[in-house]
Length: 156
Image (cartoon, rainbow, N blue to C red; front, side, top):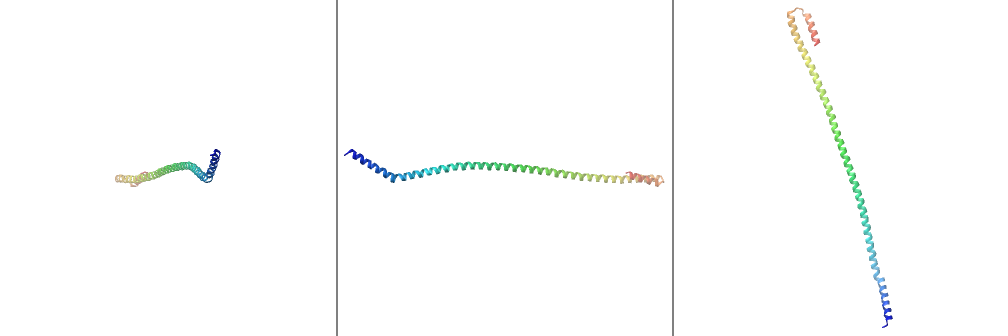
């Protein structure tokens, strides 16, 4: 055999192998590689979107927590203010009630004092009358003694 013919035959066989590989084997391999590269790219994009969504969710959750804390602080402040208002209102009502009770007690005391004076005045008048009666029994001038008793009663 001739080496040139063998070399030429091997070259033709290699060319047919390259043509067959390029025509039938290479396109599905390239398509599979392209599809795999596309899936990898989509997976990387999804992972990036997931990271961004996670970061946004973290920010939103932090904002929601801050807002909830602010609302809780506001509610606590309002309840404290309301409690102070209720305490102050109760104090004011107690002071008003105390003043009313004090005024009522003073009025009752004044009425009792007036009654006691009136009773005392009547009693003194009765005693004066009894004394006058005794005086009158000894002395005969009833007009002078009546004037004297009336003056005493008016002074009391």
